[in-house]
Image (cartoon, rainbow, N blue to C red):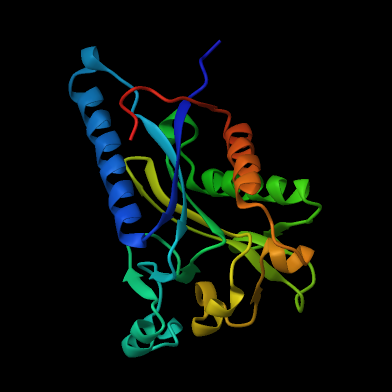
Length: 241
């Protein structure tokens, strides 16, 4: 039987966006360099180390490479006055918000250890979020043609997004990932057109249930569901970050 892929989990805690982005880039480059070595010298073959990073960011808006600047509804002066950072970044998708009470997940996965199909990869991330929400009695699903996880997507006037996604992939190694609203202050979304979609609302677990959730508990369930959906085990080798 083929052994299950291994992934190192790291909870980065409350962290500004820039160092988390830098960490992702560093881990991706290490994995890519290992894959290049594997091809140039098969005798020294070694699987790239994979990571799953969880973060809670300080308030920040990020704009994907295919996004539109006009979907940010604040000036730089207004951002500065409200203590909000802003980064145009190298993932797919449009603009979104990250902040306290939100689980931002960054899988640094080598898809050649899973499936080299970006569509399946995104659907698996969505599935893990959907299963986590089900644990709390929140029915969620996909919205046809739109990436992410939604509440009541079948009712056009009530459809609301609870998890946004945007990724980058280099030599089948992923970075960036998902933004899952748990206890998120949703007022921050009023300053942007989230994901470039002007006619859909944004929600959170707190909004849906009417109570604040234990973040560590939600992280634990989500961590387990991601491993279950993708079919890997967690490991902590001595050279982990």
